[in-house]
Every structure is written in C-alpha cells, then in structure tokens.
Length: 343
Ligand SMILES: [Zn+2]
Image (cartoon, rainbow, N blue to C red):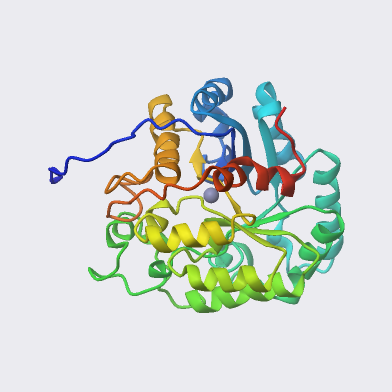
C-alpha cells in the first residue's frame, strides 16, 4: 500500500525546460524491445510527444552494425533530423582471429553512414556467457582495437559496463534495490564468474586511461552515482571522460547538496540523458521529462524521481541549478561532443 504524504510544499510538477534539450541517452531498438521492435512504437508519435516535452534531439543507443544499423535507421527515417544514432561492433566475435579487421570494417561502415558514435554494453563483462562462454574483461587487449579505431575515426564511445553497486551485492532485504532485484533476479550480479563492482570500475578506468585520444561518455554518472567524489577524481584525471545522468536522478536526488556541487564543478563534462524508452505512452513521456526538469531546475522537495517503480524506493530533492549550468547540461556539452547543432 502506498503511504500518502501530508507535506504541503511548492510543487512545479510541469516545469518547462529553460533551454532546448538534447537527450543523450534513449532507446528505440531491439536492446529493450526485442527483435520485432518496429511494431512496438510509432516513431512520429513518440517524437511528437518528446518535442512537446521540450526535447529537440535524441541520441539513440543500440547494439547494431551493418544491416541491423540500416534497419534501425529505416525505422527512425521519418524523423531523422531529430535523431543521432550510436551503433556498435560485434563483440561476440572477440575470440576470432580476424576480430581486428571486423571491428575496423564495422566502425568504418557506421562512420560512413552518419553514425554518431559507438555504444559498448554489459554483454562483455556481465552477460559474456551468452557471447563467449564466459565473461571477458573490458580491458582485455582483444578489445583495444575498438578504442583505438574510435579514437582515430573520432567516434565517441558511450559506455555502460556496470550497474549500481548493490546489483553486485548480496540479494537480501538489506540490499537497497531489493524490490527491483526481486522483480528482476536476472539483474543480480552476485553470481560466480562475474567480476565485482570494484573490478568493473577498475576495468572502466583502465580503458579510459589507456586511450586518451578516445572520447568516452560513461553512462549513468560514470557508473557510480553513489560515489560522486570518486567520479570527480576520474574526471580530474581523464580529460577524455564525460558522463551522462541517465536513470540516476534517484541517486543524485537523494544527495542534493553533493550532487549540485558535483554538477557545478564538472559542468562542462556532464550530459543530459534519461534512458527514455520509445514504448512509453504520451503521458509517461510528458511526466518523465517534466520530472527531470523539475529535478534540475527547481528546489522542490521530496518528490518521485522519473523511475519510481523501478529504481530507488525513496524520494528526491531538486537541485535548482543556475541557467549557465543548465544550458551546458541540456544541450551545449552534447552539441560539442557529437558535433551536432540545434537548428
Ligand atoms: Zn540505457
């Protein structure tokens, strides 16, 4: 049963964004919606709802290359001006002899077909069993070619290699994502054969450090929104590292003083992203974005974050960021990194 809150407070539920918005982190393909993803949403309708909520462009992340990339572009075609698309490389071939050539071919193909960057995902270190028979390390020398070619081809990499630390911890009532992990036990990584959260952070740091000419956008506040001091240390050390805030308003919003100071300090390195799913209803899209704006712009207190049923079982507090910071977060930083402009 949901407890009714009796606090009477300022409420800017439908806060409009103060600047145009680029959503750096959205999903429109098979990664979340399965192989028949084309049937799960109507591109024009979703884009219309996003535009109504103040979004001017969306960056789509999928594990696609060659014909599957073309297929995704076809699905988005009617609104192509609205999208920038990140593809990927077939990491399942990492153990094959010609992997280097394959990567080169796949990245060049994407680059020549207007692809904006490369997405790397949890399949290497967490779901590797399905791909290689075991999990591999992200800093395994076999993957060096990806980082090297992306640096040469000026393709930024969006990297999402770990989930919140508690996904790796023992799954019992003391786990702060117990509700979420009980509903989705497959997201619990407290299993043999899976590297610890700390090892994941090490691997992530190694590839960023070893590839200074490659731009990395590390999703979900550098994979470690629970420890902004640590993320700040990485940002200090590695000028080629950026972070998005996708699906981490729950974490940022329960440490509003720390989060505000962090975002202000690293305002040139943080990108607005949400993890929007194209299958959201029109109402959900409106509520979803306005909650993000409310969180970033207002000092509203104790309200639901954008994923209340799924992520942290707690309320959040608005950051009330200044205009010059919001402007960078909402679109300027992403414009710079992706070399795209809002017309
Ligand atoms: Zn995502």
